[in-house]
Image (cartoon, rainbow, N blue to C red; front, top):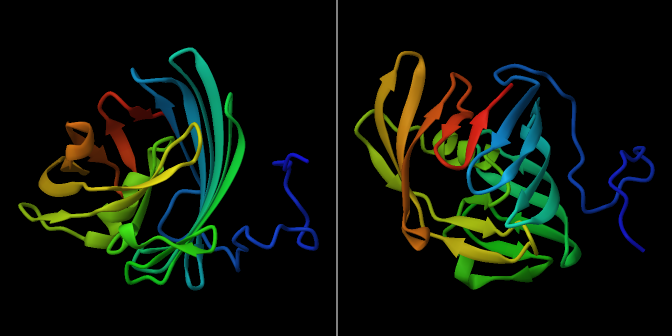
Amino acid sequence: MRKRLRRKTSAEKEPNVPVRGGREHVDLPATAAWRHLDARTGFEVLFLSRETDGYFLEGYTAAVEEQEAWAVRYAFTLDPSWTTGSAFVIGRSALGEHDLRLESDGAGAWLVDGKPMPQLTGCLDVDLEASACTNAFPVHRLGLEVGQAADAPAVYVRARDLSVERLEQSYKRLPNDGEHSRYHYVAPTFNFRAVLVYDVFGLVLDYPGIAVRTA
């Protein structure tokens, strides 16, 4: 039986979906949205909340890429430093429906669907291929000053089949453009580099060739 993505009552929530505590919108907008660019056509919508013990982010992203449609739902729990604690992802594509549960000890060790994956050791963030929101995680967590740079290897999740791999990447803080912060982002695996622009909340505004913020 396929999982339904409707909202469940508290009594019927799936046990592996993060459960939110008391919400208070303190230092984040309640929502954000992006339009996919170039590589795919589609849209992403994100809902954010500040929790008593960190942050909860829930979103939906769908696109058509190389004439194939896919859709992804995700939910993240993060601690106050923006280190990922857990992620639950459901995806649907021509390959079928998949779900994925990621759990971290906060120090770089990961369980993938309950099983250790040593090749992910040292990763503190999750990067969804389907999402522009996850590029906020290392920026918040690292807190780089202008001129500083850091490696930020991430647990990378593919959109079509939710397969998991390690993604080496790095961020270097550039001088601000007005109130917008900028980072030189490099992902050697994909031979990709770009300057990412963020808003005052640390969410991506412009991800060249990938996504642009619309709300």
